[in-house]
Length: 150
Image 1 (cartoon, helix red, strand yellow):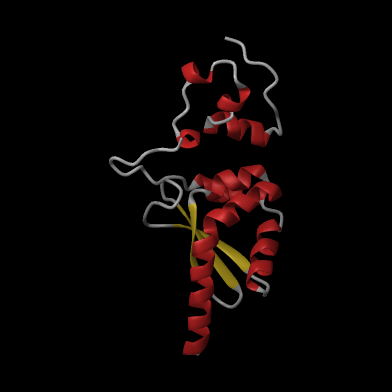
Image 2 (cartoon, one colour):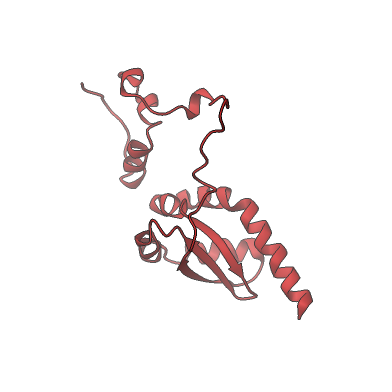
């Protein structure tokens, strides 16, 4: 029995290492899933069940994920782990940190990751897409920026 727990622990660790990439893959399944899963973390794994925890600051996201997912997450995790996996959701006791890293003091932020600024964006659609709110709206509605008016 202990050997199986070790196997699942290593699978859980692999999931945790790949979690940001897996969340990114959810953009293909449903753009809103990617946004909602930014506040999640794989908490536990057994032979047949994956427990995904959600940030206590955003408990409503959990219900939205349940509503939006039509089996795509089951397929994604089952394929990755090589066995059929059910998914259980729960609110975590602590906040999710992997998707919300603050820069360290003195850390240079790459140009592409600098905060959005309306002034510097001007009429350049590529700059406006860097704004996470704008990007989320475009993803949800499968839209494009056609024109920017001041």
